[in-house]
Length: 335
Length: 296
Image (cartoon, rainbow over all chains, first blue to last red; front, side, top):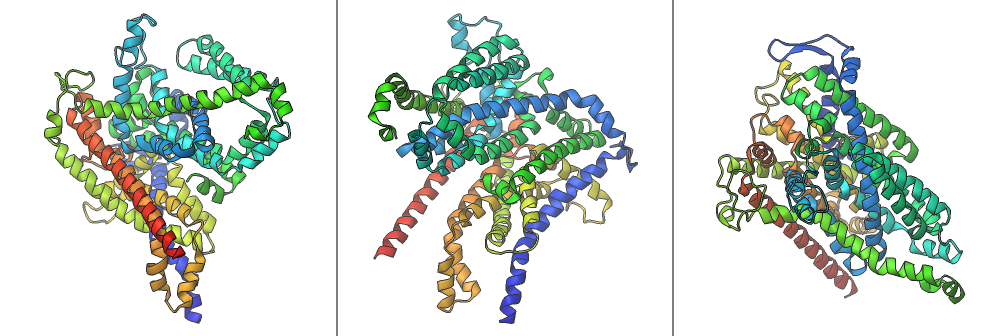
């Protein structure tokens, strides 16, 4: 009896030990080493010395803040666009999927079975100046010949949105699927009808502001996207959004929204493949700088400092979030 | 759903209700088809271009239909070695990460212990860190171990072993999360029944617990394998001279991608789809068998 009790007490630790040891040795310790390396001075040929050169941090931020800012803007926009695309998709699969539910879910994750690089290269083929997408439009004379998508911020943001859309759609689907449909019916029975005029106004403002930002970042001029954005937003707000949706569905979907936005935003901010393959030198992100500093210039201190700043910024945001939701929920919601 | 509204309301809001039906019946399905097409389009292009016969070195514009590349899928210098490395790394990292991660998943879902929330945080952190940071920190660590008294080639210079270490690391968390999700509604009374019937903990685990969690473990292993075989970013930082399939793609995209890359990509895609379909069918069959067995 005593032996059994003893076993039960150490069993969880015995199960945890090898895996957690691996994570401590190859996740926690490397992160710490990266911090130490950022305070090195020297170069790859002469060797490095630990000089605690704290000045590297203000220097790195001073020199590379445009890339940091661009990463946050691109990552943020891609997250918002993935939400705008993914929410109706997840909603349709969860509430109207019927017999097609499993096939649709399978199609959503199917891109994961193909190499991330090959998919991005495929976009390069599709978006090429006379490619599958722009070629026919230009032949019809709908766009000028010199119009291009490749090597623009638009292509980078679209590429990131594409790559991380399933990370957004799946947690949203999980959250929406769990909602007790009777709650929504009850709300409708209790006259939670169309959400007007608030819906029109909110839709107009959100669509307009988002359009302005997208237009400005993607170099198409704020108003070219801003005005259509406002119109679409107002239409969606007027005709598609009900009070039952605002008061019942949306609050219940919040865990999925949080999980999906984290799972999209974090890899999006650190991504450099899309910027490298679909962008131009003017649309490079912080990931490109880190990659080049490490692997091409072997300037380990600066690269480590930038990488550490990126990690710290994300972890601080995450810590605030974990405090709000509780860690158990955080890891659970990401399934 | 609309049946619950009273006829009076329907009559008063007839245009709105009709609009609602229109959206329900047409707009939403069209939207779903559109977005799934958008998701699948690049995959389709990859498959299509595996049948291309490019004149130049780059496989970026469509010329002619050809199955040359399919007849000789490894016919590029370095490609066979890269694919072999990828398969070795993916298999080994899946095996080890699945074992380690399943153990953690079991511990988290069936024991109350001190340090539980710290464990959860430690599991979550690698998934919440951008890949580039994971790769970069491993690289700095491997480089810094030069000063430690370790056997040459264990952690530095970078080689297939360091890639393996990295892949196991990022796979563990995904395995834990997947296995834990499967253990959430675990029927504990079956284990208690086995123990009451005289089975010890070891027998109970292998005869009752393990068969029940096996679908979750397989799902986790499939996920780990696909993450590993596709990984470019972390591998680029930890590979040194070792080449894997994603590294080969990246290296050749600067010079022009050979058609063979699309062929291998298509093979990986098709095998992954087949694997998922087969495991789903198998699980369904097991479920049917268990269900009818329970009724008999």
